[in-house]
Image 1: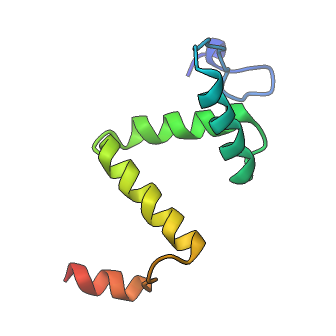
Image 2: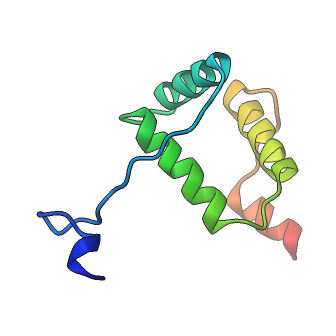
Length: 91
């Protein structure tokens, strides 16, 4: 990594980007990052983009399924499974 890629404290340099979103989508993003305990909108968006880049094999449909299962788990609308139960299913 070159000196140009880091800031004065040695951390990776960050670049600002601009994106256009509908107001309603931005409201959804703001509600989500706050509900999930992120410190900022930027931190949440960086994590979402990092997940998309690091896990390109997960399709939009896969993410929807993950979100639905997580929602059901949080609201108590589904049966829960232990780690051992899940591992046993894969055997």
